[in-house]
Amino acid sequence: MCRNIVPLHNFEPAATDDECRDAALQFVRKISGMTKPAKANQAAFDRAVDEIAHATRHLLDDLVSPAPPKNREEEAAKRQARSADRYEALRAFQEQKKAARAAS
Image (spheres, rainbow, N blue to C red):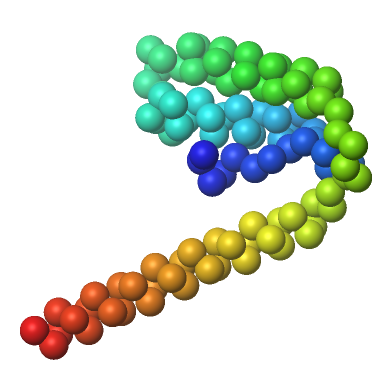
């Protein structure tokens, strides 16, 4: 899954329309392979974002969960910690690779 798209279900307060649109935009960018479409494709791109945002809003409104709502700040902190772990592992790998090249 695209790391920029974050879960929006079961939060207090509920996801906003802007959050639904942001997720839709990231999704369309990912599947289209472009961040900024050409003028010839702009209308189709924007229409796809609008339709996906609309469907996302309906999905979130219809979903139910027996679990208590999650805290946005806690979930954001967890995402940031996972990201930091990924980047630290990547940095350590790159240093090992550089050291191995220097040793050969």
